[in-house]
Image 1 (cartoon, helix red, strand yellow):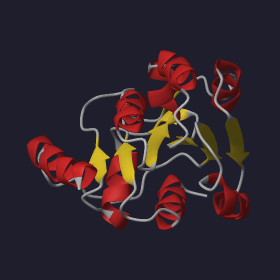
Image 2 (spheres, helix red, strand yellow; image 1 turned 180 degrees about the vertical axis):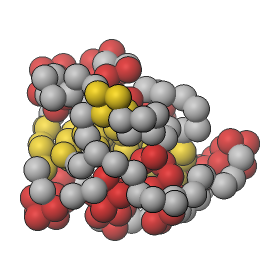
Image 3 (spheres, helix red, strand yellow; image 1 turned 60 degrees about the vertical axis):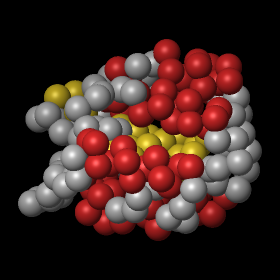
Amino acid sequence: MTRAEAVARVADAMPPDWLTIVCNGMIGRELYTHADAPSRFYMIGSMGLASSIGLGLAIVQPARTIVVLDGDGNVLMNMGALGSVAAASPANFFHVVFDNHAHGSTGDQCTISDRVPIEKVAAAAGYRRTMRAHSAGELDHTLTKFFRETGPAMLLVEVERGNKPGIGRVEPSPAELTARFRLSAIG
């Protein structure tokens, strides 16, 4: 399945009021194009920090569901965040990683996720649950239960390399994204 298809399937499984932090690059652009909402914060130009921001949000907003949408390259950039998430152990933290074994936003340079299973690293760090979806059917089945059980949890979704042709950029400025997200997070 393509990453854009996987992002859409995950987005469709989440109520729009869940607070969602989205990594930089194509994943953010794909979510923005498919299902933008004020409760979705797009990291623009900051690689590897989505899970750290999501963790902080999960700690200060324990009654809200926090979802981090990440890429394999982003997670590998800041592996220490996995330990921080596990140590804090927020029950409301859900981490979805789209893994194409490449830096899809910068030219498909290979990552090491074909040799370093990210969900197993998260499990070893102390995430309560980790899962892997190999296909669209597995993803749909896994999504029926993934968000229902206690976090911190990681779902790694295997996706094909490549970007959706002609996809636009996230249009609001970082300041506008921050302002609208702040209203969603407080409200």
